[in-house]
Image 1 (cartoon, one colour):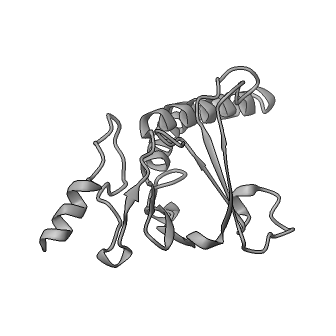
Image 2 (image 1 turned 30 degrees about the vertical axis):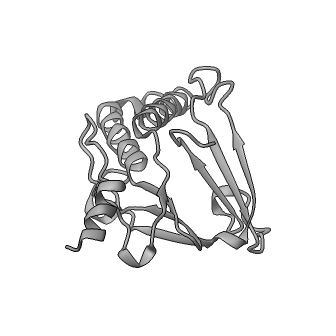
Image 3 (image 1 turned 30 degrees about the horizontal axis):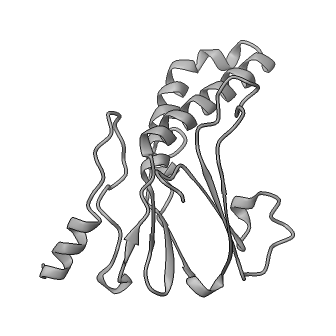
Length: 186
């Protein structure tokens, strides 16, 4: 390993291991060709706790309206929710080079955590000159029926890509990037 690669790893080092078991590889995903200038860290633990609380609350709401049967799966479901949300929180990486913004989500387990349910790595490269607007929204209010307080700051990036009329969800729209849980999004 060359000295510049060692400095890159030291500068943009691996993340701390969480207190929960995760399936995500925590080594930085950057290639030397990426020429990364800065990595934007996420508050992984805050994101994990928030998303876990939201999903567990949603599960309870679903169970209330669908009878007793969902409660039979409660222990297994809650265990999977906790592990899945930890993987979802720790799989995210964002960095910038002189020319591009990199948004990477590493391979992770999902659903019942079987191999057939794995989600592959995604790597989105956005040229800096295509970014038109950046909107930072501070947390306020609650996420699920006044039960889970919003604690995550969101960052929305709008690019010069054509917006898809079919994408009702901003996370599915090619012209918009929506990111949650940065440590310091300003």
